[in-house]
Image 1 (cartoon, rainbow, N blue to C red):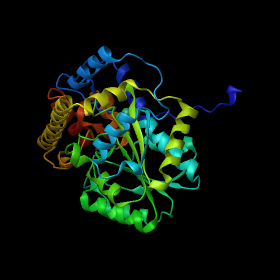
Image 2 (cartoon, rainbow, N blue to C red; image 1 turned 60 degrees about the horizontal axis):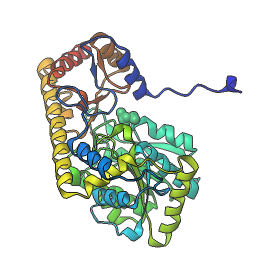
Image 3 (tube, protein in one colour; image 1 turned 60 degrees about the vertical axis):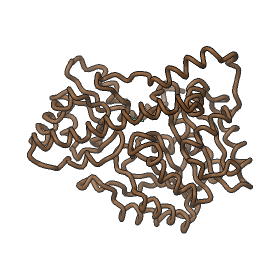
Image 4 (cartoon, rainbow, N blue to C red; image 1 turned 120 degrees about the vertical axis):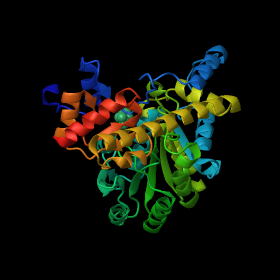
Length: 394
Ligand code: LMR
């Protein structure tokens, strides 16, 4: 039977990851997969994570199953981090998931279970896995305009005009902050407009928030989500702890749903049942480390300081790259990268220029022009600026 099995579509981000690993050049620079790197090009375990893990090893006396939805203490800690108290617990359902990806999957499976006719509205561009998961789950989707590529800014008019086409019950997939792949986020007045549109047209936002703390800070990065949460009856959240706790391989994630109180218990039971049908009990180690950090004021402060240092480093790299490209090209065409947020920017490059960056200069960007600013180091930045100038000239 497998002779008729169609080969899966390759994922652009994972292809770049594999090509980078296979490249023997010492001078290669990985601006592909969304992983933070320090000044030495390493992705170390955060200090607060190390300490929380040491505590867990010492104190944990069982590794028996948690609950199907994971540990309620994890739900509470993540709700406080994400929502800052704007939503009462009686309106919150939640389930631990296998990373942010698993949380997206769980959120979409919940939507399909509740309303298989719901259409997803997904920004163009978006993280490619949003589309892969939507199609795997079997939900219809349509793109909405998002990026004004020349300005490196939000295409407000296009976005709102496209979302006006959505029907009641449709779901708008939004990036909570640090939009992947563009680094372009709605500002507070845009979030207010999005909330008003969802309310007026009966749309449900699903907010994928994987980079809280990398944009403008932990609270500022959640301000849009909190606005939606305080204004709307229903919001679906898919959150990741992979990046802001640096626990990529531990698969820390949570799906959270804000509902009217009367619907909360059935949503909670459905999230648990969906976990049962796919992974049974969710992974616990990373979630427990996150809970340990978020519920201990000293650990939390250390973690927040470390994350803030990472955020500031990315911001300096952004400014450094904008300046270096300006110096190399005499043009401010890529000046917008300094103002964008989080790990990613989408550079206005053709696929031929992206291939030339990779083949001639060993600089790996994802198709469509996405570069991970956190993959730059002070050492590699001039090389990348020269490579960009060279491909822009060609
Ligand atoms: C990325 O966008 O590079 C990360 O979220 C990693 C992934 O799984 O795609």
